[in-house]
Amino acid sequence: MDSYQHFIGGEWVGGDAFLTVINPSDGAPMARIARGGEAEVDAAVRAGHAALEGAWGRVDAAARGRLLSRLAELIRRDADALARMESEDVGKPMSLARNDVAVCARYFEYYGGAADKVHGETIPFQDGFTVMTLWEPHGVTAHIVPWNYPLQMMGRSVAPALAMGNAVVLKPAEDTPLTALALARLAAEAGFPAGSFNVVTGLGEEAGAALSAHPGISHISFTGSTEVGTLVQTAAAKNTIPVTLELGGKSPQIVFADADSELAASTILRGIVQNAGQTCSAGSRVLIEDSIYERFTADLAGRFKAMRVGSASQDLDLGPVVNAKQKERVEGYIELARRDGLPILAQGELGTNLPSDGFYVRPTLIGDVPPDHRLAQEEIFGPVLVAIRVKDEAEALHVANGTRYGLAAGIWTQDIGRAFRLARKVQSGQVFINNYGAGGGVELPFGGVKGSGHGREKGFEALYGFGTLKTVALRQGA
Image (cartoon, helix red, strand yellow):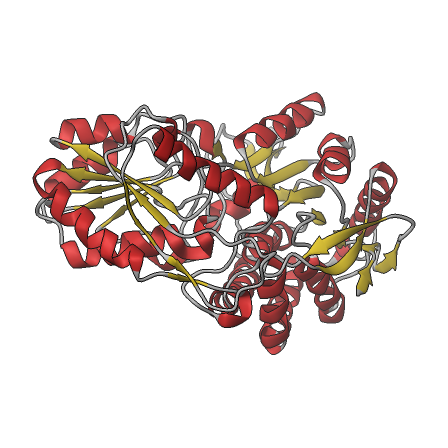
């Protein structure tokens, strides 16, 4: 079993204490990672500041872009190895892991091209003055990424921070840290100066908490649960630094009677079973106009029954959830539906020859869920879709906005006027009309409202989030 150290200041360090990484497909140990805490975080932050004061701080925007583009090339070069590592670590099918590698490379490519295109402006002012604005990096930025899409989340968070000239300290989830360490190795090969890209592994309550509270950090990017996000934001507030939070979701898919039923059903299915439902923006509530409820749920039920769950290597429709705790959580919600008399309309099937200790959950469709029920209000984070009847547009909007979350929403209708009315009124950071996810384009700003967080990732908006605006006013004389 391989052991991995932290990557700090361009060197592999640490290893007095370790954590075991478990393979979700069979429940067996697959690697050991260094268990970092305050000392390792402090060393990484200091390395970041040293890089900013030294070689990394002297790299201009165009050269930063070339480094990011080079890293994208290396990710693509090692795509097969990275996909296998991500698949085994997270438990996701290989086909999905390969897509995650491609998206990660695309983030570095996109922000490599954007690095020298973040411009300030001149501002008309009083006679005798020239006033301009300049974009500058925050300094050392912290990146706490979740276990569901490690490579994608690292690219989404780290690439724009580096493009703006920040030094990075990355803390991956303890369940899925291996591709973060592989990415650090590739960054060094690409030529990033020592200390510009640091990785500290460990537990969230130890390394993550220390990173959130460190006074040398100038910005925090966190993706995870609303509860932990609140703790991160509280820690950041004590140091008066900005935070980008991408938190949970209970995203609605609203289906009206005039929708393209085939397209809607197939897309809604993918939107909940992808990555075993472990996606913040998963469309986990389907709100169906009453006149088509029976027909549409029957169609969905047939699709759910055809789903097959397998190990990562089997590359079936979905793999296991990430760990035993998550399996218990998801199955607890399914059992809650049974106890409360809610109809289980359909479940997928487990594949053959699955390891008995793997963390497998059957995809499940639950019908006639009241909008205020826990199943319709709480983020399950598994392959569980709840169906809710709505009688008209007004009720659909009320139910869609009736949770603490606001990350994404889907609207399915041929009535474009209705689609845009709802798009404006639904409380959500992203709205998709007659699609869901828009292919996940890196160019599209992404983030939430309400309990789903604040700030935006992806697109040019992410660059601005990782920079600070300085105003310079020059008096030219009388």
